[in-house]
Image 1 (cartoon, one colour):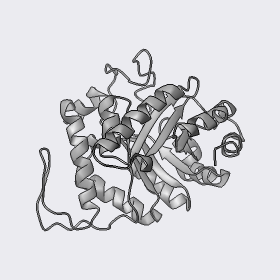
Image 2 (cartoon, helix red, strand yellow):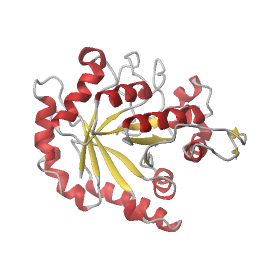
Image 3 (cartoon, rainbow, N blue to C red):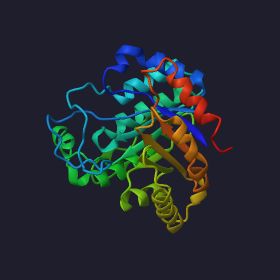
Length: 294
């Protein structure tokens, strides 16, 4: 099992501690991967139901800075040499598909093949409205953007005649990625799980470290794997990445669940670290890496 960590790109820490410095320290501590999150804009008040809270309420300050995922991945690439670098998750339908494909290929080529892309359809209608992207078409755009990115990553994509985007023939799109960039689908709905198994390279789930539900994860994995089998794909090749929020202060508690998570097929966990402690990254790395299933 790989143990990854969320690099904060929301709030004050990116300026206070420095993205490069945090990335270097986390890699030195022994983590396998570094991840950031993604939003482009925030409304003054979030009215949309937040799918990862029991009451559906988004509880963060909407006027705090949320630093751009692509820009920070570039900084993280330059500051590290070994770790996988990922987004958990990018709101892909909000991005220009060909520009996104170019950015991702550039990051992967310059990092030596270390990029992983958690992607999702999105949940906040206000963000789509602000960027003039129809919220009701977000799932279909996600499918199309994934197909178009993979075509662009060949370097010489054929003409693409999609419902939401058309790319003419005779276009060159270089550099190509250094490796197969995995698309890990975020979300817990049946459409998200079917997309993970049928079109993606795995599932990126999210739970609170205070209430890890192995049964719910096992059910989601089953839905994803069934979708893969339906279209003739090998379900055992799909990754299962679990993002554990509210985990900074309790790495030892998370460590107690690693064996049970590994038994149901979880391949990666992503945790937070407590940057308020002098030994925050090292404490989490010691607690988790020594306990992970081999």
